[in-house]
Structures are given as C-alpha cells and as structure tokens.
Length: 161
Image (tube, rainbow, N blue to C red; front, side, top):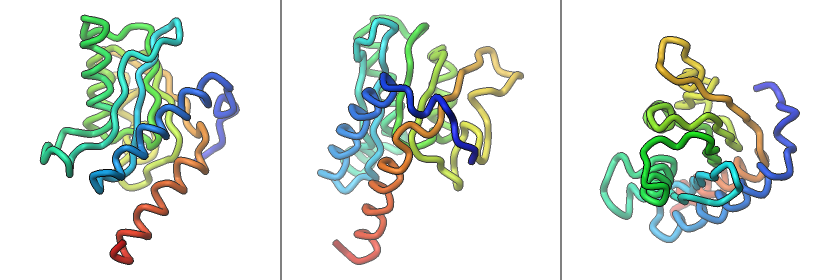
C-alpha cells in the first residue's frame, strides 16, 4: 500500500504506543495481538481494547469493538463524534462498520491487512459513500512495529510456542 505522510504524526504515534501496549495484553490469552484505543478531541483516552475472542469465546470481541464499547460507556454516548480510533491492524469489515455506526470521524491504523482489511486494502467500508457516515483514514502509523508483532505471534503459533 502507498506510504502516508500522516503516518509520522507524533500524536498518532503516541496513541499507537497505547494501542501496542493493549495488543500485548491479548498475548496473555493466546489471542491475536491487536490493540485499539479511542481518543477524544482533547486527547483523553476514552476506551481501550485488545482481542479477547479466545479469552471470552465471543466472535465479536475484536480490539476495536471493545474499545468502542468502552469509549461509549465512558462518554455516556454511542456517538463518538470528534474521536479517533487508533488500532494496530487495519480494521476488518465488522470493526470498520462499528466505527462508522459510532460516528468516529477518523481511524488510524498501523499494519495493513491484505486478507480481511476494510479500510482500503480488501474493502473500503470507512470511505463508502453509500453509507451514512464517512471516515478519514490514516494508515501506516508505526506500521513496521505493528506488523512485526503479528509476524512474531504467527511464527510462534506455527512452531507450537
């Protein structure tokens, strides 16, 4: 995918650090290490999530969905206007759809997902003009670091670690 000059934004990089910390929590339960944070306009973190599908047996327990749920609870509002969703991997169709429905105006992610991504690689749910809300997409935030975490996880899985 093409490089993005916004991928070096220091604030987004800092928030991605929080998402990476969350992703590491998924490793405790053998979940795929993906992390997400929802950040308000003023920089306050409203919600954090990491994959919990293995931990909970819930197929919807993706990092983004959990972060959005926690952010909505914190904000006491399902509309997350003015927020940024920062996630270590390009959101899938479910997570992209959830962010659209939550009215999140900006999604930033680290690594591209060429198999299931819905922010420009396989699908482009976030910028689908037929939907009721459109989202700014900022890819490539600490991309190498995000991708390496996933590569290391899947390498360990293949070798039974």
